[in-house]
Image (cartoon, rainbow, N blue to C red):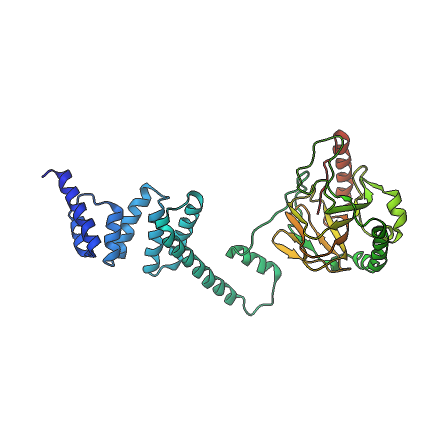
Length: 379
């Protein structure tokens, strides 16, 4: 018998023994081979409880094929049997990622489910372990956020303005009302502003679409383009007051005068009533700039309305300002049965110095003078 024929006969004998459930016989046949197939050897070692032998055989496969999915899955199970949950998690994580990238045949689905269960169990124990380490401390929001990111419970969202990025600013989705002394006086005017809103809507409940096709440029790629489901009633637009609207709503104009809005020729101030009809969803997007904050003074807020900025979702409450960085991915929706309206305006970010504001003003004016301004569709 030739060496090749002998190797083939031993391999067939090992396979037949494994099928009969005689793992020790299979192992003996494989040990007699000069070069036993690594996966077959791993299976025989597994069934005889030789975890070190199984690991060595699987490592042989992975040295040649680092992304071999069956070997990755088997290594996860092997590490768990050897009592090393941390190592098992690493192998299972690699296997799940590989399956997500390339797919997995149906016969591997049970092992994939087991790998995901190993990851879930390890994550839960890791979370308990971390919680115990700081259990005697008060709740600290930044620690909670960092821990959620570490555990994969939250996604990291950063400023990604579509037009202009100013470096060195805090990566914050929301700012709090109490941080600004001009917020409370504006909130105190909510009832007067709502009265003006009701008066305007009594004659025309719909507003012009927030996103409109320009007459002198390409149409914005926005599913709500030219759709009054997302409506706008401007008080300041392109840096100029909308005379008729401003005259009808003196309370709005008085409130806006209290806010540190940018004054940039052709661009700012920008202020409007933003209307969202029931069933309307403003898709995730980024604003033009990270040099400003967007303010929402909620006026009409039915149930089922919310705003997500980054990883955090907040609901509007009538008369309570929401202040956020619209250069972070954000979206809004109205899943209620009535119309939502907020007073929307922009303010300078507080971290930007007066000298920097002056320089930015000149830069933005120069940008707009050089070519047409980009369409601002901040939520």
